[in-house]
Image 1 (cartoon, helix red, strand yellow):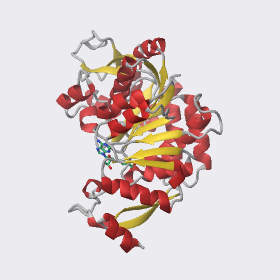
Image 2 (cartoon, helix red, strand yellow; image 1 turned 120 degrees about the vertical axis):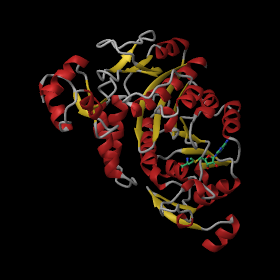
Image 3 (cartoon, protein in one colour; image 1 turned 135 degrees about the vertical axis):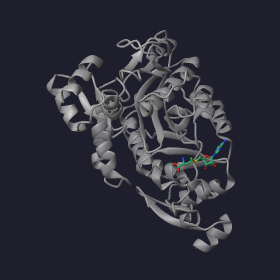
Image 4 (tube, protein in one colour; image 1 turned 90 degrees about the horizontal axis):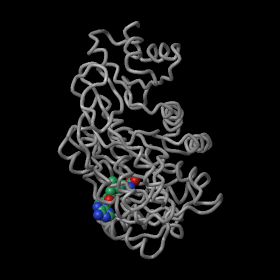
Length: 403
Ligand SMILES: C[S@@+](CC[C@H](N)C(=O)[O-])C[C@H]1O[C@@H](n2cnc3c(N)ncnc32)[C@H](O)[C@@H]1O
């Protein structure tokens, strides 16, 4: 059977299991780099096993949102659009594990063949509608035809920016944009010119570069959505491995759009005293030591998750033992649930300690001491050397220096 399939596809395949799906993917051993690590971009159709965690959260989100989201009444089938689908692994999983109706698309004919095969193998042909179009063309067509997606999941190579306008316009009165961005070099400020060009921000590389990446992407979505008359709610946004992922709910309404724009601001980092936080558009100097700030913005300055949806995700996660990375998913959701309550960006303790010319205490010690002083504090999921706290900067420095 596999030989016939391989002849038809023109490349060798293997069967992998992910979540509840069985998926035919290009034979991974044939695309190894010199260091013997599999390079998904070299395969004829893109499959990245390192994105299992990303897909697990996507499945949970679809399950949670169909219950929690106001647009889908309980028990109603969510309609999910995946315009850049590769092997179809995510689409098939949405169909099987979230009971969704999926509109799935890829520009590459080899990918489309594989998607169709994977739909058949998993008996979900009736739940997947497969297209071979440019992603923006698909999204415009869906809008013209009056399809009103519950979720549009944009999972491209690099930046989702080229697909944002069509994706936003494809949403009806209410729906969710799920976005992956793997262009972390611009977003974290390693490539400043690309960051300015792609996301229209004053670029910088702060000491909280992973959170800056998330807040830049989300801020950009808020601005694009507002220009089409949508307000936005950030249901979940995070950085993991080497990508940013965001789930943004769009709600039609000029007033809502205006309110969402009010959540934008600028981020600042002071290389002299370590100040980390939000600043006004016009602030160029550190509010504590007057040194010139590293400034980035406009960025989103609000909470990076909605507590109700996160609780729902956790509830779903405890039950979904079949997930590909079940333990990691639970650990992440539990930790992020506490972290999201603190809206300020994280402190990189190694950088602050180097400014203070002292050894780095244990992160858990810092968190405990901050809590003893009545502040909220957590070890951040963004970086093993990072702490989030509600303590004001001078108080934070004082507590740190006393340890
Ligand atoms: C990162 S992969 C998708 C991975 C997939 N979402 C998953 O979870 O495994 C990006 C896919 O987008 C497709 N693609 C690239 N440009 C496209 C375009 N303009 N329109 C539609 N598909 C496109 C590529 O062929 C590739 O399969």
